[in-house]
Length: 200
Image: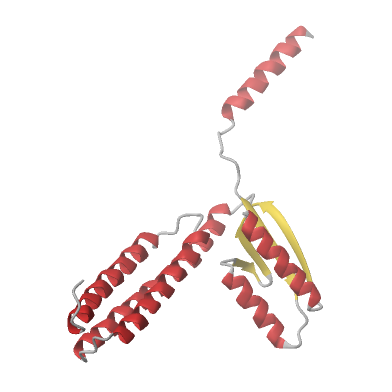
């Protein structure tokens, strides 16, 4: 009997030594919902809300977000709205037992798509400022309009960055694009001050 105790202890030790060390699994919020077929605007409204939150679709009507207090609050509110529409919705908190990297890659890809949109808008912004130079439009009205556009881009970036919790690859590129916009706008502002007869 003593031999069996010793053997059992050794077996337990072998099992422990072979078990890989793993970090705590990431928690995900999963919203599973169903919306009445009519009116179709309800389905579109929910889709826009889910995309606006930065969630990804695992399949039709199954959306996921990395767990966070703010994300949970947003999903709870959306679930309530879906139920009030006459639909059904279930909100789960779970771990991915298999395919975790695929889910994380899908989430990062969604963030990179958003970053790419901002980068494209930055290019549009630079082209707009260039047009101001070509047309010799150096007024405070034009400066204010361009400044507002840049503020919108920064705010948009802030929202995407806040939900970029898994480290998407295009964040640094987006920051560089925004910095370029800011530099160009500063140069344009200096020209406006000069044309208006003011020193900076």
